[in-house]
Image: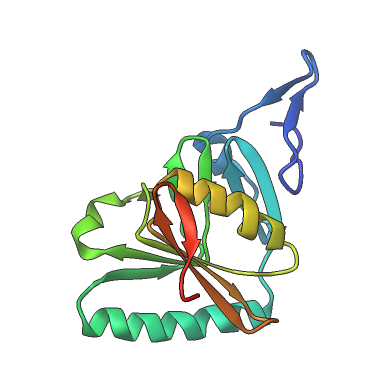
Length: 172
């Protein structure tokens, strides 16, 4: 791969002018340059590293969840960066991941292989569109039971539950 397209733009094959779908193997060759690389349906998405404020929100939320999950022996909570491999052309790095203890089998050497029980994304200006639209559709497609979207600026947490293949906002 000679060049990297930013913000989910599909790469084009210059010889045949066709879209090239990237795979997990392509993902492994991405540079270690402080950017966050994900492949959504074969298309590369590149976002900058999270800000200090973003990471602070992530840490605080993870600490609260970790204490509750440990106290009740519910499973594992993991923070980014951690690869969640939904298939060979869809690799994401959610901010926080929860896997129930009866589903530890999806924890593999190369990352989480399959759909976690809960994925949490913390919005940043560079990730807003992907987190609220693209990732929500992908997570529903792959059967992620719960999806939370945290907006640090609006000080909100939206909790979505997968029901019949679609996410429904909870708590209304």
